[in-house]
Amino acid sequence: MPSLGSGKYDRGYIIPIGGCKHHITDDIAEQIRSICLNANASAVILTISSNTIEHDLRSNLIDNGFSTCSEVTITSRQDASQEELVQQLADNDLIIIVGQRPLQISTIIGGTPMAKQLRKLNADGVHIAGSYGAAALLSEHMIAGGEESITPKQDGVTMAPGLGLTNRFMLDYHFQQPGRLGRLLTALSYNPFTIGIGIDEGSALFISPEEELQVHGKGSATLIDPSNLQYSSMGSAGSGDYISLFGLQMHILAPGSRFKASDHQAYDEHWA
Amino acid sequence: MPSLGSGKYDRGYIIPIGGCKHHITDDIAEQIRSICLNANASAVILTISSNTIEHDLRSNLIDNGFSTCSEVTITSRQDASQEELVQQLADNDLIIIVGQRPLQISTIIGGTPMAKQLRKLNADGVHIAGSYGAAALLSEHMIAGGEESITPKQDGVTMAPGLGLTNRFMLDYHFQQPGRLGRLLTALSYNPFTIGIGIDEGSALFISPEEELQVHGKGSATLIDPSNLQYSSMGSAGSGDYISLFGLQMHILAPGSRFKASDHQAYDEHWA
Image (cartoon, rainbow over all chains, first blue to last red; front, side, top):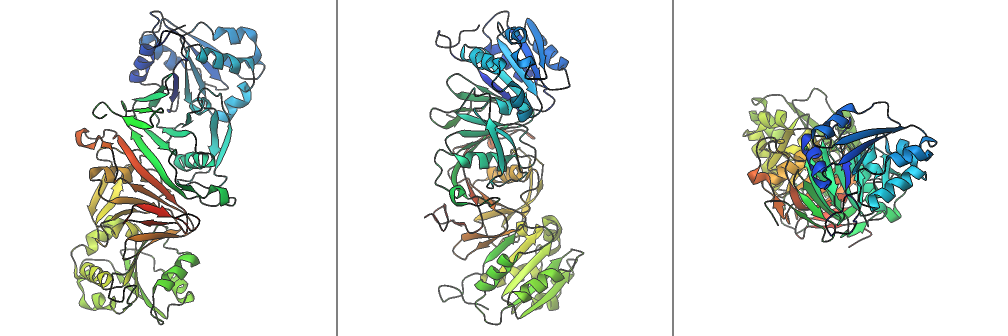
Protein backbone atom coordinates (compact mmCIF):
# COMPACT_ATOMS: atom_id res chain seq x y z
CA MET A 1 0.00 0.00 0.00
CA PRO A 2 1.57 3.33 -0.99
CA SER A 3 2.23 6.03 1.56
CA LEU A 4 1.74 9.46 0.08
CA GLY A 5 2.94 12.94 0.78
CA SER A 6 2.71 13.50 4.49
CA GLY A 7 4.18 10.16 5.51
CA LYS A 8 1.01 8.86 7.14
CA TYR A 9 -1.56 6.98 5.09
CA ASP A 10 -3.52 9.59 3.14
CA ARG A 11 -6.38 8.49 0.95
CA GLY A 12 -5.40 7.44 -2.55
CA TYR A 13 -5.95 9.54 -5.64
CA ILE A 14 -9.41 9.56 -7.21
CA ILE A 15 -9.10 9.37 -10.97
CA PRO A 16 -12.23 9.85 -13.08
CA ILE A 17 -11.53 9.13 -16.76
CA GLY A 18 -13.92 10.79 -19.21
CA GLY A 19 -13.40 8.66 -22.26
CA CYS A 20 -15.51 6.10 -23.91
CA LYS A 21 -14.32 2.55 -24.65
CA HIS A 22 -12.13 2.75 -21.52
CA HIS A 23 -9.13 3.68 -23.55
CA ILE A 24 -6.48 5.66 -21.70
CA THR A 25 -3.76 7.68 -23.37
CA ASP A 26 -0.10 6.99 -22.60
CA ASP A 27 0.04 10.33 -20.80
CA ILE A 28 -2.71 9.16 -18.43
CA ALA A 29 -1.12 5.70 -17.95
CA GLU A 30 2.25 7.32 -17.22
CA GLN A 31 0.72 9.70 -14.71
CA ILE A 32 -1.13 6.84 -13.01
CA ARG A 33 2.14 4.92 -12.75
CA SER A 34 3.99 7.94 -11.37
CA ILE A 35 1.62 8.42 -8.42
CA CYS A 36 2.17 4.77 -7.39
CA LEU A 37 5.29 5.08 -5.25
CA ASN A 38 5.70 1.30 -5.04
CA ALA A 39 8.53 0.06 -7.28
CA ASN A 40 6.49 -3.05 -8.16
CA ALA A 41 3.15 -1.34 -8.54
CA SER A 42 0.21 -3.62 -9.19
CA ALA A 43 -3.19 -2.80 -10.65
CA VAL A 44 -6.53 -4.54 -10.90
CA ILE A 45 -9.24 -3.85 -13.46
CA LEU A 46 -12.68 -4.26 -11.90
CA THR A 47 -15.21 -4.69 -14.69
CA ILE A 48 -18.82 -4.27 -13.58
CA SER A 49 -21.62 -5.47 -15.84
CA SER A 50 -19.76 -4.68 -19.03
CA ASN A 51 -19.46 -7.11 -21.93
CA THR A 52 -15.98 -6.16 -23.00
CA ILE A 53 -12.86 -7.36 -21.26
CA GLU A 54 -10.40 -4.50 -21.41
CA HIS A 55 -7.24 -6.18 -22.69
CA ASP A 56 -6.03 -2.89 -24.20
CA LEU A 57 -6.27 -1.20 -20.83
CA ARG A 58 -4.36 -4.05 -19.20
CA SER A 59 -1.51 -4.02 -21.74
CA ASN A 60 -1.41 -0.23 -21.57
CA LEU A 61 -0.80 -0.39 -17.81
CA ILE A 62 1.82 -3.14 -18.14
CA ASP A 63 3.56 -1.19 -20.94
CA ASN A 64 3.70 1.80 -18.64
CA GLY A 65 5.48 0.04 -15.83
CA PHE A 66 2.92 -1.83 -13.72
CA SER A 67 4.42 -5.14 -12.66
CA THR A 68 1.07 -6.93 -12.59
CA CYS A 69 -2.47 -6.17 -13.67
CA SER A 70 -5.17 -8.66 -12.70
CA GLU A 71 -8.82 -8.63 -13.70
CA VAL A 72 -11.99 -9.03 -11.66
CA THR A 73 -15.34 -9.18 -13.41
CA ILE A 74 -18.68 -8.98 -11.66
CA THR A 75 -22.18 -8.95 -13.11
CA SER A 76 -24.47 -9.24 -10.07
CA ARG A 77 -24.92 -8.21 -6.43
CA GLN A 78 -24.06 -11.82 -5.51
CA ASP A 79 -20.67 -11.43 -7.21
CA ALA A 80 -20.16 -8.14 -5.35
CA SER A 81 -20.66 -9.99 -2.04
CA GLN A 82 -18.29 -12.90 -2.74
CA GLU A 83 -15.51 -12.77 -0.19
CA GLU A 84 -12.96 -14.16 -2.65
CA LEU A 85 -13.62 -11.47 -5.28
CA VAL A 86 -13.72 -8.71 -2.64
CA GLN A 87 -10.33 -9.84 -1.31
CA GLN A 88 -8.78 -9.82 -4.80
CA LEU A 89 -9.04 -6.02 -4.74
CA ALA A 90 -6.72 -5.71 -1.73
CA ASP A 91 -2.93 -5.53 -2.02
CA ASN A 92 -2.99 -3.41 -5.17
CA ASP A 93 -1.78 0.12 -5.71
CA LEU A 94 -4.50 0.95 -8.21
CA ILE A 95 -8.03 -0.20 -8.97
CA ILE A 96 -9.64 0.85 -12.24
CA ILE A 97 -13.40 0.44 -12.26
CA VAL A 98 -14.82 -0.08 -15.73
CA GLY A 99 -18.54 0.12 -16.56
CA GLN A 100 -20.98 1.58 -19.03
CA ARG A 101 -23.74 3.40 -17.17
CA PRO A 102 -23.50 4.85 -13.65
CA LEU A 103 -26.85 3.41 -12.51
CA GLN A 104 -26.00 -0.02 -13.89
CA ILE A 105 -22.90 -0.03 -11.72
CA SER A 106 -24.42 1.52 -8.58
CA THR A 107 -27.37 -0.88 -8.53
CA ILE A 108 -24.94 -3.81 -8.60
CA ILE A 109 -22.37 -2.69 -6.04
CA GLY A 110 -24.34 -0.23 -3.86
CA GLY A 111 -24.29 -1.38 -0.23
CA THR A 112 -22.30 -4.56 -0.96
CA PRO A 113 -19.04 -5.67 0.68
CA MET A 114 -17.29 -4.74 -2.57
CA ALA A 115 -18.42 -1.07 -2.34
CA LYS A 116 -17.28 -0.98 1.31
CA GLN A 117 -13.94 -2.50 0.30
CA LEU A 118 -13.43 0.14 -2.44
CA ARG A 119 -14.12 2.98 0.00
CA LYS A 120 -11.87 1.46 2.66
CA LEU A 121 -9.01 0.82 0.23
CA ASN A 122 -9.17 4.38 -1.13
CA ALA A 123 -9.18 5.76 2.44
CA ASP A 124 -6.12 3.60 3.16
CA GLY A 125 -4.17 5.00 0.20
CA VAL A 126 -5.11 2.89 -2.84
CA HIS A 127 -5.75 4.96 -5.97
CA ILE A 128 -9.15 4.38 -7.52
CA ALA A 129 -9.93 5.25 -11.12
CA GLY A 130 -13.31 5.03 -12.84
CA SER A 131 -13.66 4.99 -16.58
CA TYR A 132 -16.66 6.16 -18.61
CA GLY A 133 -19.83 5.57 -16.53
CA ALA A 134 -17.68 4.61 -13.56
CA ALA A 135 -16.18 8.12 -13.59
CA ALA A 136 -19.50 9.60 -12.46
CA LEU A 137 -19.84 6.80 -9.88
CA LEU A 138 -16.86 8.01 -7.83
CA SER A 139 -18.70 11.08 -6.39
CA GLU A 140 -20.89 11.08 -3.28
CA HIS A 141 -23.72 12.62 -5.31
CA MET A 142 -23.79 10.93 -8.69
CA ILE A 143 -25.22 12.18 -11.97
CA ALA A 144 -27.05 9.14 -13.32
CA GLY A 145 -28.81 10.62 -16.35
CA GLY A 146 -30.79 13.58 -17.54
CA GLU A 147 -32.34 15.57 -20.31
CA GLU A 148 -30.34 16.56 -23.35
CA SER A 149 -30.45 20.28 -22.63
CA ILE A 150 -27.58 22.74 -22.59
CA THR A 151 -29.47 24.91 -20.10
CA PRO A 152 -30.70 23.72 -16.70
CA LYS A 153 -34.29 22.71 -16.03
CA GLN A 154 -36.27 21.65 -13.00
CA ASP A 155 -36.22 17.81 -13.08
CA GLY A 156 -33.49 18.02 -15.76
CA VAL A 157 -31.21 15.51 -14.06
CA THR A 158 -31.44 12.09 -12.44
CA MET A 159 -29.28 11.93 -9.33
CA ALA A 160 -28.40 8.97 -7.15
CA PRO A 161 -26.00 8.18 -4.33
CA GLY A 162 -22.61 7.25 -5.79
CA LEU A 163 -19.63 5.33 -4.42
CA GLY A 164 -18.87 8.38 -2.26
CA LEU A 165 -15.10 8.78 -2.60
CA THR A 166 -15.41 12.58 -2.85
CA ASN A 167 -18.03 15.08 -1.78
CA ARG A 168 -16.12 18.14 -3.04
CA PHE A 169 -16.54 17.35 -6.71
CA MET A 170 -19.50 16.12 -8.73
CA LEU A 171 -18.24 14.35 -11.83
CA ASP A 172 -19.72 13.85 -15.27
CA TYR A 173 -18.11 11.94 -18.11
CA HIS A 174 -18.16 12.02 -21.92
CA PHE A 175 -18.83 15.71 -21.67
CA GLN A 176 -18.89 16.25 -25.43
CA GLN A 177 -22.26 14.51 -25.62
CA PRO A 178 -25.20 16.88 -26.19
CA GLY A 179 -26.87 18.14 -23.04
CA ARG A 180 -24.22 17.24 -20.50
CA LEU A 181 -23.77 20.87 -19.41
CA GLY A 182 -27.49 21.34 -18.70
CA ARG A 183 -27.74 18.30 -16.48
CA LEU A 184 -24.59 19.23 -14.56
CA LEU A 185 -25.92 22.77 -14.01
CA THR A 186 -29.28 21.36 -12.88
CA ALA A 187 -27.52 19.05 -10.41
CA LEU A 188 -25.43 21.93 -9.02
CA SER A 189 -28.48 24.17 -8.69
CA TYR A 190 -30.19 21.66 -6.40
CA ASN A 191 -27.65 22.37 -3.68
CA PRO A 192 -24.69 24.49 -4.76
CA PHE A 193 -22.15 23.19 -2.22
CA THR A 194 -20.20 20.93 -4.54
CA ILE A 195 -18.04 21.76 -7.56
CA GLY A 196 -19.16 20.31 -10.90
CA ILE A 197 -16.73 18.97 -13.48
CA GLY A 198 -17.43 17.64 -16.95
CA ILE A 199 -14.62 15.48 -18.32
CA ASP A 200 -13.98 15.25 -22.05
CA GLU A 201 -13.53 11.93 -23.77
CA GLY A 202 -9.82 11.12 -23.67
CA SER A 203 -9.00 13.15 -20.57
CA ALA A 204 -8.72 12.22 -16.89
CA LEU A 205 -8.66 14.07 -13.59
CA PHE A 206 -6.19 13.25 -10.85
CA ILE A 207 -7.75 14.34 -7.57
CA SER A 208 -5.14 14.34 -4.81
CA PRO A 209 -5.79 13.63 -1.12
CA GLU A 210 -5.64 17.43 -0.64
CA GLU A 211 -8.53 17.85 -3.12
CA GLU A 212 -6.29 19.43 -5.73
CA LEU A 213 -6.98 18.13 -9.21
CA GLN A 214 -4.97 18.11 -12.41
CA VAL A 215 -6.14 17.37 -15.96
CA HIS A 216 -4.24 14.85 -18.07
CA GLY A 217 -4.77 13.21 -21.43
CA LYS A 218 -6.26 14.45 -24.66
CA GLY A 219 -9.09 16.87 -23.96
CA SER A 220 -10.19 19.40 -21.38
CA ALA A 221 -12.35 19.53 -18.31
CA THR A 222 -15.13 22.08 -17.78
CA LEU A 223 -15.31 23.13 -14.14
CA ILE A 224 -18.34 24.96 -12.77
CA ASP A 225 -17.89 26.46 -9.31
CA PRO A 226 -21.22 27.56 -7.80
CA SER A 227 -19.76 28.62 -4.45
CA ASN A 228 -20.40 32.31 -5.16
CA LEU A 229 -23.78 31.73 -6.78
CA GLN A 230 -25.76 34.97 -6.49
CA TYR A 231 -29.20 33.72 -7.39
CA SER A 232 -31.00 30.53 -8.41
CA SER A 233 -34.66 30.29 -9.41
CA MET A 234 -34.68 26.53 -8.64
CA GLY A 235 -36.55 26.97 -5.37
CA SER A 236 -39.56 28.60 -7.02
CA ALA A 237 -39.56 26.72 -10.35
CA GLY A 238 -42.18 24.23 -11.50
CA SER A 239 -41.56 20.88 -13.12
CA GLY A 240 -39.77 21.26 -16.48
CA ASP A 241 -39.23 25.02 -16.01
CA TYR A 242 -36.01 26.60 -17.19
CA ILE A 243 -33.81 27.71 -14.31
CA SER A 244 -31.93 30.99 -13.91
CA LEU A 245 -28.50 30.77 -12.28
CA PHE A 246 -26.51 33.98 -11.77
CA GLY A 247 -22.85 34.23 -10.85
CA LEU A 248 -21.41 30.81 -11.65
CA GLN A 249 -17.64 30.72 -11.98
CA MET A 250 -16.39 28.68 -14.93
CA HIS A 251 -12.87 27.43 -15.57
CA ILE A 252 -11.86 25.57 -18.71
CA LEU A 253 -8.95 23.33 -17.79
CA ALA A 254 -6.83 22.12 -20.71
CA PRO A 255 -4.37 19.25 -20.07
CA GLY A 256 -1.82 20.28 -17.45
CA SER A 257 -4.10 22.78 -15.71
CA ARG A 258 -4.93 22.38 -12.03
CA PHE A 259 -7.64 23.44 -9.59
CA LYS A 260 -7.48 23.57 -5.80
CA ALA A 261 -10.71 23.09 -3.89
CA SER A 262 -9.11 24.73 -0.84
CA ASP A 263 -8.94 28.19 -2.44
CA HIS A 264 -11.32 27.65 -5.41
CA GLN A 265 -8.57 28.74 -7.77
CA ALA A 266 -7.32 27.36 -11.12
CA TYR A 267 -3.62 27.13 -11.92
CA ASP A 268 -1.47 26.53 -14.97
CA GLU A 269 2.26 26.12 -15.47
CA HIS A 270 2.27 29.55 -17.14
CA TRP A 271 0.14 31.22 -14.50
CA ALA A 272 -0.15 31.41 -10.71
CA MET B 1 -40.15 55.95 -36.64
CA PRO B 2 -40.57 55.41 -32.90
CA SER B 3 -39.00 57.68 -30.34
CA LEU B 4 -37.82 55.73 -27.33
CA GLY B 5 -37.19 56.40 -23.70
CA SER B 6 -35.26 59.60 -23.45
CA GLY B 7 -37.35 61.54 -25.96
CA LYS B 8 -34.54 61.88 -28.51
CA TYR B 9 -34.01 59.20 -31.13
CA ASP B 10 -32.18 56.33 -29.43
CA ARG B 11 -31.19 53.32 -31.47
CA GLY B 12 -33.84 50.65 -31.83
CA TYR B 13 -33.83 47.37 -29.98
CA ILE B 14 -31.64 44.56 -31.29
CA ILE B 15 -33.52 41.26 -31.12
CA PRO B 16 -31.63 38.05 -31.86
CA ILE B 17 -33.99 35.07 -32.01
CA GLY B 18 -32.39 31.70 -31.36
CA GLY B 19 -34.92 29.39 -32.92
CA CYS B 20 -34.88 27.38 -36.02
CA LYS B 21 -37.61 27.60 -38.67
CA HIS B 22 -37.96 31.31 -37.78
CA HIS B 23 -40.91 30.56 -35.58
CA ILE B 24 -41.55 33.04 -32.79
CA THR B 25 -43.67 32.35 -29.75
CA ASP B 26 -46.64 34.60 -28.91
CA ASP B 27 -44.67 35.87 -25.92
CA ILE B 28 -41.91 37.08 -28.25
CA ALA B 29 -44.38 38.56 -30.76
CA GLU B 30 -46.21 40.37 -27.95
CA GLN B 31 -42.96 41.75 -26.56
CA ILE B 32 -41.89 42.91 -30.02
CA ARG B 33 -45.23 44.66 -30.42
CA SER B 34 -44.98 46.29 -27.00
CA ILE B 35 -41.63 47.97 -27.71
CA CYS B 36 -43.10 49.58 -30.87
CA LEU B 37 -44.67 52.72 -29.41
CA ASN B 38 -46.40 53.55 -32.70
CA ALA B 39 -50.15 52.79 -32.53
CA ASN B 40 -50.06 51.60 -36.16
CA ALA B 41 -46.81 49.69 -35.96
CA SER B 42 -45.57 48.20 -39.21
CA ALA B 43 -43.06 45.42 -39.78
CA VAL B 44 -41.10 44.09 -42.72
CA ILE B 45 -39.67 40.61 -43.07
CA LEU B 46 -36.35 40.69 -44.94
CA THR B 47 -35.59 37.21 -46.22
CA ILE B 48 -32.01 36.74 -47.38
CA SER B 49 -31.10 33.72 -49.49
CA SER B 50 -33.65 31.46 -47.85
CA ASN B 51 -36.07 29.27 -49.77
CA THR B 52 -38.98 29.57 -47.41
CA ILE B 53 -41.31 32.55 -47.34
CA GLU B 54 -42.25 33.03 -43.70
CA HIS B 55 -46.04 33.32 -43.85
CA ASP B 56 -46.34 32.01 -40.28
CA LEU B 57 -44.09 34.76 -39.02
CA ARG B 58 -46.12 37.35 -40.92
CA SER B 59 -49.48 36.19 -39.57
CA ASN B 60 -47.98 35.88 -36.09
CA LEU B 61 -47.01 39.57 -36.19
CA ILE B 62 -50.40 40.66 -37.59
CA ASP B 63 -52.19 38.56 -34.96
CA ASN B 64 -50.17 40.33 -32.28
CA GLY B 65 -51.16 43.82 -33.32
CA PHE B 66 -48.95 44.95 -36.18
CA SER B 67 -51.06 46.93 -38.65
CA THR B 68 -48.98 45.87 -41.68
CA CYS B 69 -46.23 43.39 -42.39
CA SER B 70 -44.60 43.51 -45.81
CA GLU B 71 -41.99 41.14 -47.21
CA VAL B 72 -38.71 41.79 -49.00
CA THR B 73 -36.74 38.87 -50.42
CA ILE B 74 -33.20 39.11 -51.73
CA THR B 75 -30.92 36.40 -53.06
CA SER B 76 -27.89 38.30 -54.42
CA ARG B 77 -25.62 41.30 -53.88
CA GLN B 78 -27.37 42.92 -56.85
CA ASP B 79 -30.69 42.67 -55.01
CA ALA B 80 -29.05 44.17 -51.93
CA SER B 81 -28.02 47.20 -53.97
CA GLN B 82 -31.40 47.86 -55.63
CA GLU B 83 -32.59 51.28 -54.49
CA GLU B 84 -36.23 50.23 -54.58
CA LEU B 85 -35.71 47.24 -52.27
CA VAL B 86 -33.44 49.24 -49.94
CA GLN B 87 -36.12 51.95 -49.65
CA GLN B 88 -38.83 49.42 -48.80
CA LEU B 89 -37.09 48.87 -45.45
CA ALA B 90 -37.64 52.49 -44.39
CA ASP B 91 -40.81 53.72 -42.64
CA ASN B 92 -41.21 50.56 -40.56
CA ASP B 93 -41.03 50.11 -36.81
CA LEU B 94 -39.49 46.66 -37.03
CA ILE B 95 -37.36 44.70 -39.48
CA ILE B 96 -36.97 40.96 -39.02
CA ILE B 97 -34.05 39.49 -40.94
CA VAL B 98 -34.53 35.83 -41.81
CA GLY B 99 -31.73 33.60 -43.10
CA GLN B 100 -30.18 30.19 -42.64
CA ARG B 101 -26.42 30.56 -42.23
CA PRO B 102 -24.60 33.67 -41.01
CA LEU B 103 -21.94 33.57 -43.75
CA GLN B 104 -24.57 33.05 -46.45
CA ILE B 105 -26.22 36.28 -45.30
CA SER B 106 -23.07 38.33 -44.72
CA THR B 107 -21.58 37.50 -48.12
CA ILE B 108 -24.76 38.76 -49.77
CA ILE B 109 -25.37 41.98 -47.83
CA GLY B 110 -21.86 42.86 -46.53
CA GLY B 111 -20.88 46.37 -47.74
CA THR B 112 -24.07 46.87 -49.79
CA PRO B 113 -26.51 49.79 -49.53
CA MET B 114 -28.92 47.41 -47.78
CA ALA B 115 -26.44 46.74 -44.95
CA LYS B 116 -25.85 50.48 -44.59
CA GLN B 117 -29.59 51.06 -44.53
CA LEU B 118 -30.10 48.47 -41.79
CA ARG B 119 -27.41 50.07 -39.62
CA LYS B 120 -28.76 53.56 -40.22
CA LEU B 121 -32.37 52.58 -39.49
CA ASN B 122 -31.38 50.82 -36.25
CA ALA B 123 -29.36 53.89 -35.19
CA ASP B 124 -32.43 56.04 -35.92
CA GLY B 125 -34.70 53.93 -33.69
CA VAL B 126 -36.00 51.07 -35.82
CA HIS B 127 -35.95 47.71 -34.03
CA ILE B 128 -34.03 45.01 -35.87
CA ALA B 129 -34.54 41.32 -35.21
CA GLY B 130 -32.55 38.46 -36.70
CA SER B 131 -33.83 34.91 -36.67
CA TYR B 132 -31.74 31.72 -36.71
CA GLY B 133 -28.53 32.41 -38.70
CA ALA B 134 -29.43 36.10 -38.84
CA ALA B 135 -29.28 36.23 -35.01
CA ALA B 136 -25.51 35.76 -35.11
CA LEU B 137 -25.27 38.32 -37.94
CA LEU B 138 -26.38 41.21 -35.73
CA SER B 139 -23.07 41.43 -33.78
CA GLU B 140 -20.00 43.37 -34.86
CA HIS B 141 -17.88 40.23 -34.51
CA MET B 142 -19.89 37.33 -35.88
CA ILE B 143 -19.57 33.62 -35.14
CA ALA B 144 -19.82 32.05 -38.58
CA GLY B 145 -19.05 28.41 -37.80
CA GLY B 146 -16.74 26.19 -35.84
CA GLU B 147 -15.82 22.81 -34.51
CA GLU B 148 -18.30 20.71 -32.59
CA SER B 149 -16.45 20.86 -29.31
CA ILE B 150 -17.81 21.74 -25.89
CA THR B 151 -14.36 23.00 -24.84
CA PRO B 152 -12.44 25.75 -26.63
CA LYS B 153 -9.61 25.06 -29.07
CA GLN B 154 -7.17 27.17 -31.02
CA ASP B 155 -8.76 27.56 -34.50
CA GLY B 156 -12.02 26.19 -33.01
CA VAL B 157 -14.21 28.94 -34.45
CA THR B 158 -14.70 30.74 -37.75
CA MET B 159 -15.25 34.44 -37.20
CA ALA B 160 -16.26 37.14 -39.65
CA PRO B 161 -17.38 40.76 -39.55
CA GLY B 162 -21.13 40.88 -38.91
CA LEU B 163 -23.77 43.55 -39.50
CA GLY B 164 -22.30 45.44 -36.55
CA LEU B 165 -25.36 46.59 -34.61
CA THR B 166 -23.70 45.76 -31.25
CA ASN B 167 -20.13 45.40 -30.12
CA ARG B 168 -20.99 44.65 -26.48
CA PHE B 169 -22.48 41.23 -27.16
CA MET B 170 -21.37 38.37 -29.37
CA LEU B 171 -24.38 36.27 -30.30
CA ASP B 172 -24.78 32.62 -31.16
CA TYR B 173 -28.04 30.89 -32.08
CA HIS B 174 -29.54 27.41 -31.81
CA PHE B 175 -27.41 26.90 -28.74
CA GLN B 176 -28.70 23.39 -28.05
CA GLN B 177 -26.69 22.11 -31.02
CA PRO B 178 -23.57 20.14 -30.04
CA GLY B 179 -20.40 22.18 -29.77
CA ARG B 180 -21.90 25.65 -29.63
CA LEU B 181 -20.37 26.37 -26.20
CA GLY B 182 -16.84 25.49 -27.36
CA ARG B 183 -16.93 27.79 -30.36
CA LEU B 184 -18.36 30.67 -28.31
CA LEU B 185 -15.63 30.21 -25.68
CA THR B 186 -12.98 30.07 -28.40
CA ALA B 187 -14.32 33.29 -29.92
CA LEU B 188 -14.31 35.04 -26.53
CA SER B 189 -10.78 33.86 -25.78
CA TYR B 190 -9.42 35.56 -28.90
CA ASN B 191 -10.13 38.96 -27.36
CA PRO B 192 -12.14 38.91 -24.15
CA PHE B 193 -13.69 42.37 -24.44
CA THR B 194 -17.15 41.31 -25.54
CA ILE B 195 -19.84 39.32 -23.72
CA GLY B 196 -20.88 36.02 -25.32
CA ILE B 197 -24.46 34.79 -25.39
CA GLY B 198 -25.85 31.53 -26.71
CA ILE B 199 -29.57 31.65 -27.42
CA ASP B 200 -31.73 28.54 -27.16
CA GLU B 201 -34.14 27.56 -29.88
CA GLY B 202 -37.45 29.24 -29.10
CA SER B 203 -36.05 32.13 -27.10
CA ALA B 204 -35.13 35.69 -28.03
CA LEU B 205 -33.08 38.49 -26.51
CA PHE B 206 -34.32 42.06 -26.40
CA ILE B 207 -31.24 44.30 -26.24
CA SER B 208 -32.26 47.84 -25.31
CA PRO B 209 -30.49 51.05 -26.42
CA GLU B 210 -28.90 51.08 -22.94
CA GLU B 211 -27.39 47.62 -23.61
CA GLU B 212 -29.66 45.94 -21.11
CA LEU B 213 -31.04 42.66 -22.37
CA GLN B 214 -34.01 40.55 -21.37
CA VAL B 215 -34.80 36.94 -22.35
CA HIS B 216 -38.24 36.10 -23.72
CA GLY B 217 -39.84 33.02 -25.24
CA LYS B 218 -39.46 29.36 -24.55
CA GLY B 219 -35.88 28.56 -23.55
CA SER B 220 -32.91 30.17 -21.85
CA ALA B 221 -29.81 32.08 -22.79
CA THR B 222 -26.30 31.14 -21.64
CA LEU B 223 -24.25 34.26 -20.98
CA ILE B 224 -20.45 34.08 -20.64
CA ASP B 225 -18.81 37.22 -19.29
CA PRO B 226 -15.03 37.13 -19.75
CA SER B 227 -14.42 40.64 -18.38
CA ASN B 228 -12.73 39.29 -15.24
CA LEU B 229 -10.84 36.55 -17.07
CA GLN B 230 -7.82 35.61 -14.95
CA TYR B 231 -5.85 33.58 -17.47
CA SER B 232 -6.06 32.33 -21.03
CA SER B 233 -3.58 30.00 -22.72
CA MET B 234 -4.73 31.14 -26.18
CA GLY B 235 -1.68 33.33 -26.74
CA SER B 236 0.77 30.44 -26.43
CA ALA B 237 -1.37 27.64 -27.94
CA GLY B 238 -0.68 25.88 -31.22
CA SER B 239 -3.22 25.04 -33.90
CA GLY B 240 -5.88 22.64 -32.61
CA ASP B 241 -4.63 22.82 -29.01
CA TYR B 242 -7.14 22.84 -26.17
CA ILE B 243 -7.32 26.19 -24.42
CA SER B 244 -7.38 26.90 -20.68
CA LEU B 245 -9.61 29.78 -19.57
CA PHE B 246 -9.76 30.65 -15.86
CA GLY B 247 -12.29 32.91 -14.18
CA LEU B 248 -15.16 33.18 -16.64
CA GLN B 249 -18.42 34.38 -15.16
CA MET B 250 -21.47 32.42 -16.32
CA HIS B 251 -25.13 33.40 -15.98
CA ILE B 252 -27.97 31.16 -17.07
CA LEU B 253 -30.88 33.44 -17.97
CA ALA B 254 -34.30 31.77 -18.03
CA PRO B 255 -37.20 33.67 -19.66
CA GLY B 256 -37.80 36.95 -17.83
CA SER B 257 -34.23 37.32 -16.59
CA ARG B 258 -32.20 40.38 -17.51
CA PHE B 259 -28.56 41.40 -17.80
CA LYS B 260 -27.07 44.90 -17.82
CA ALA B 261 -23.83 45.41 -19.71
CA SER B 262 -23.23 48.63 -17.73
CA ASP B 263 -22.66 46.80 -14.41
CA HIS B 264 -22.13 43.23 -15.72
CA GLN B 265 -24.94 42.04 -13.46
CA ALA B 266 -27.88 39.65 -14.01
CA TYR B 267 -31.34 40.42 -12.66
CA ASP B 268 -34.59 38.58 -12.14
CA GLU B 269 -38.02 39.66 -10.96
CA HIS B 270 -37.35 37.73 -7.74
CA TRP B 271 -33.86 39.06 -7.23
CA ALA B 272 -32.00 42.38 -7.38
